[in-house]
Length: 92
Image (cartoon, rainbow, N blue to C red; front, side, top):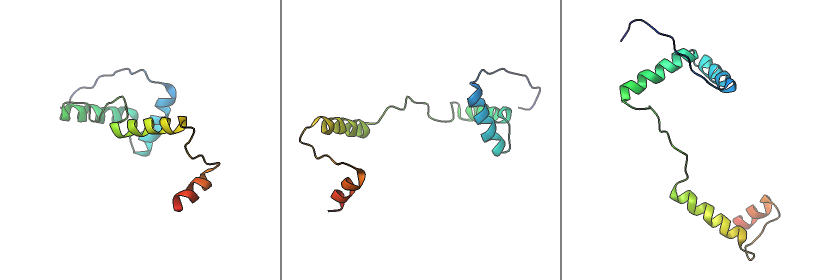
């Protein structure tokens, strides 16, 4: 796969680029090398080499969120004035 090289141009948020430069420098490489690693791994795997998702919560998380909303609306639910009070209650 060795051969001639070509230049590409990528638009990126300046702060994001600065953060990436810092990270990749700590790893002993520059952004160009990191991008080449990404492309080579993509070609090896025939896909983007990590999961791309909308970060939607799973069923268990959705159920917990719904339960929290139900408890928040329940006027009879036990209320605590601070975290320490809640922790004392849990230790009983």
